[in-house]
Image (cartoon, rainbow, N blue to C red; front, side):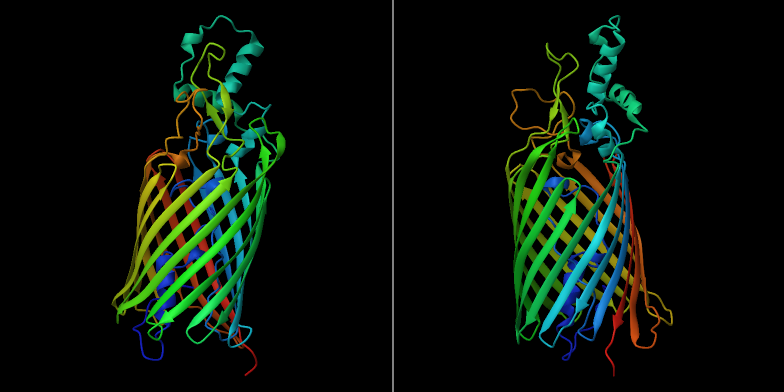
Length: 460
């Protein structure tokens, strides 16, 4: 659990290094973030590199267990499942358990196990008569009714008209309506006098993919822990079931992701800790989502526009640089800003700024409150387009708004307070976060997360 940074002392200089890492992750580590983040930062979904495992709070004094629960709710009207038009309604309920087990003085094991229950109205439309697109659905109904009195020129590409047709699909049901993603990650860490080595392994599975991951990291402390350098390498082997736009599976394909990260953390002063992180990700294999639709421009054979599956390149290189600061303005005020730059070889660039400021309340039991803010902006890749923007002459095309140009605002509120202890067990802080996300393309989302930890001590 993230805590406010105390002033470094001669006996506790290593603590700010951990705090800086927590601050860089957004003042609460990944454990407090929604597992299904709102789409941003250059292409979520199938193209997103898997995340590193999270760790329970622990200081080596007994087994620590952290219980997390995140709820995420989104909506929008540009679903790529229906060609860039239609509901993006989706909910995720995600319980997670983190375990920090100090096996010995030099060895520590961390486990993360969880299951995300995903309800998606847009994916539910994938199986409707093999005609999930509003364009296909409209053409099908037109032909079925033999309504030849309407002139094709009256059926233009206006988005509102597509939306009216999409309403016919509401209330349908299929096996893809509710999905469950399960995952297990494990990390073993061996500590030495001035360094540590970690080995990581993980597995996750969802209705249309399986993923196996391996990796490791090496951390070296400089100047008695006042500075720390970490290099990490992970590789993910994914198998994707190719469910196409008609909802029928036609084979499988593979996707590989290699993630190299370098980070440097330094105590800047008695009140400030800074961090720099650089990452490079290379992906290869099947990077498209086979059941995402694209609506081509009208042509002679297809006066209403041909509907085809998304096509994206089979490789992608992604680079990012992040700067983080954990600054204690006073003993009761801690600010945590973060800057991040991103670009990839799909010509997508993004920048984001995160800011939290934590205030300690004058209560008998320790309590902190903090506003949360993020601004994110990105350019769109050349492969993104709205219905009618592409034709058969184009090699790559997608209607996924994650790859479009947009601005996003995140704002919210969090509270963290100390829980009482019981005999033989110490509870960590309880932290609650509530966030809202607004994109300028109409997409919106809300997340609420809870985290609480407990420590099981050995016999005294």
